[in-house]
Length: 513
Ligand SMILES: [Zn+2]
Ligand SMILES: [Zn+2]
Image 1 (cartoon, rainbow, N blue to C red):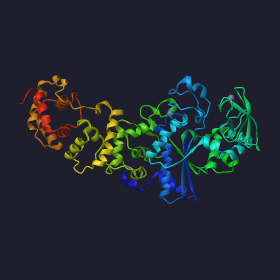
Image 2: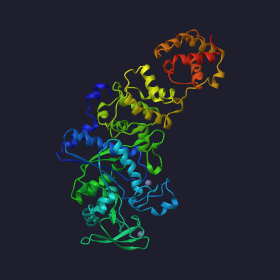
Image 3: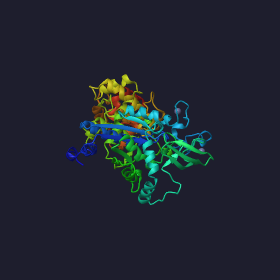
Image 4: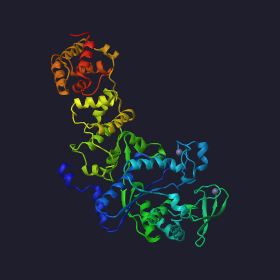
């Protein structure tokens, strides 16, 4: 797509927003997640997709609300690898909101994962009404739909059979009771219910039987819970992962159930594809293949994470590589001269105090390493080397990201450290390399800029026409860094100081030549 096409193409967010606004009804955008493990970058696609459309609606002046449902009343499915089996074995099947937290500092298992996620949402500029599923049930707000579902059991079973091809078991119920004795929702079956008392009768594998109230005494199974929630919250727009959008998937069945059993209407669907972690496949917390949002927010500004999601259309997979491509993403976001930059996505990615720095992120990584992340020296170095107008505040904000990215995700060949004294590796330099360094040293004078140093290297190399340029550059890096490769040489020497390099090259050459 060329830039002319791009500017005339309606952004996906605006396409959805205008379609939704055209219905004339106030919008309720919803998203949700089960906080059963660390919430990762992959989970972020749902909430950021919803947030972008929500912002698109508000910008149009269309009335809209945005809620986020934490599915904390879902049962713990298994003892995940990050859990202590001796402690958590007995909680499999119990609602996440009723299980103790792994660290002892949160109110429950689900809060342990939810709290950091809500903090991340705040940082990402996502303003959302948080709904906790356990509260939705315990408060009785779900009760009308529990009754309708129990009464509509035959109709629901027929819809499920028709759309999924599967016949439910004779004792199947749309409601899973929370056993009073063992605390599980996955071990008991419904034996009857009373509409007047609003109670469900059950008998459990553990031997217990009795009754529980509709309110908080269990939950609807997922395929019925979802449309019931659409009704209860009045949801009109919802993004969901492709696993729910297949034929006979939970959106298909939910759409029929809400129409035929709950007398409502399914929300406008926004199916989205996964975020694929480069080299590791789809992100999934149950498989332990995760990159937590909080960890990501340490290395990239929140705006850039928003941009990662919002610039791609929802039905396209996002390949995410936290190595070098992440640096390019930051620069694409930052630099309005870049062709690939999606200006509308940048607009929709605002999250607060972000200031463009005007220095490529990779550049910060190099300069930072050259002066060991001494901020004053970085500012001075950058001002001297091509960034005279540099804003100190913006830089103060950005430097820690560069530093943490380097520690967490930088490929080995990006890392270097300028050696205080002539590195041992310089002993391997041959006679030609030494002479080259000596000659180059004579050309270096204080105050030279990158381009001038580059020219000096070029002219010196011409005197060594018979030698491969690669060997000559290797000599420069070995004598400064003790490794054969490094940042662009002319610019790098100017950055380190031509006089410092001059002395180092002369030393490597075996004295002034
Ligand atoms: Zn905890
Ligand atoms: Zn039980």
